[in-house]
Image (cartoon, rainbow, N blue to C red; front, side):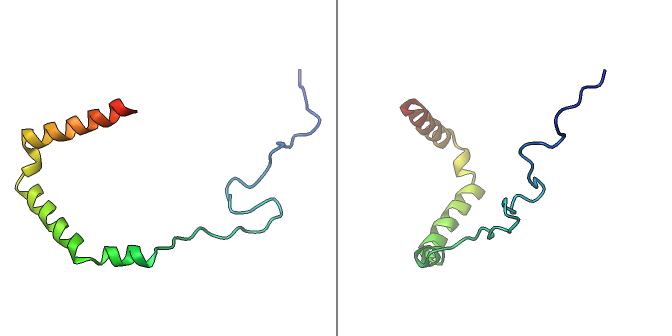
Length: 84
């Protein structure tokens, strides 16, 4: 037995391969990223560079592998999870 429907078109046909085309066939504008002047200034800050150097030194010296640091991190994670 062969059952055929009224039509064989999918009711929600759109170009799934190109989601940037809307129903009128026009391309939608591309997404863009804008970074504020304040964010740019912060990224160039020497203070951030100093903090990063301290963190890198601590990683190299295995500071973060100590039991005390691991316990503090675990406690803070538990505190956040319990507050949710």
